[in-house]
Amino acid sequence: MIRAMYSAATGMKAQQLNMDTIANNLANVNTYGYKKNRAEFQDLLYTNLRAATAEVPTGMLVGSGVRPSSITTIATNGNMIQTENPSDMAIMGEGYFRLTNPTNADRPFYTRDGSFKIDSEGYMTNADGYRLDGIDPFPEGATNIDINSDGRITYQNAEGTREELGQLQIYTFTNAAGLNREGRNLLTQTAASGDAIEGIPGEEGRGTIAQRYLESSNVQVVEEMVALIAAQRAYEVNTKSIQTSDEMLGQANNLKR
Image (cartoon, rainbow, N blue to C red; front, side, top):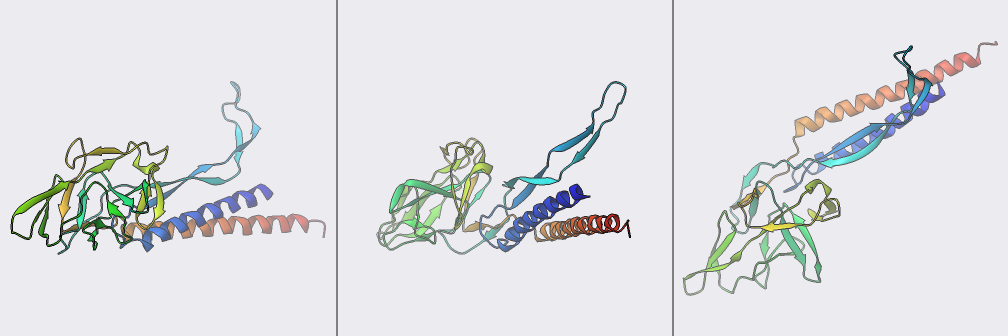
């Protein structure tokens, strides 16, 4: 009964983490480019009360609960939302934009959030001022910005002539789930993700660019609500296990009365 109480306690902790993960998904349902998380679990060590042998085909193993093993990123694409902003971009398929911090260019960031702005110097930046890597600034008076599906960026200059600004690159990873989340829709590479692989949109399995679109979160509210209810019920079952074990211990303590 004591073992049951400790096992149920690990179950409560696990479901609390599960609830935290689901709540974060729901909180980011309107975050552009957000990829939902999923909590995963493993069973804990077992006490071997009787080993299985050739004569005894089944043994007696009693588990000691559960523990979180990982929080996995589900990297499926979100829906595309059309906008009227020519600097908005969405990646249709695999890949990430790379951003650089003007004050620390040696540490690049990666993102799926393509809601870019053009700052006072002509650079395409995110909301925090991080610049889209590899793209020169637009000259003063640039209009009619056009971004092709393969990442070529052109504009109309002050004289009315179209000019090419540059070629946008996107980046893929061997294990994108291993990227580290920094907050603010920013990711950084890790030893688990592997090095960033640069390439032109649409080539070698990379996604293509959709101008005037943004990628919404891939969180499905109905799915998360179902998972939320399941986590709540699992938490309640574990609390019931503790209550039942406590009642059984109370009855054992009252035997001599």
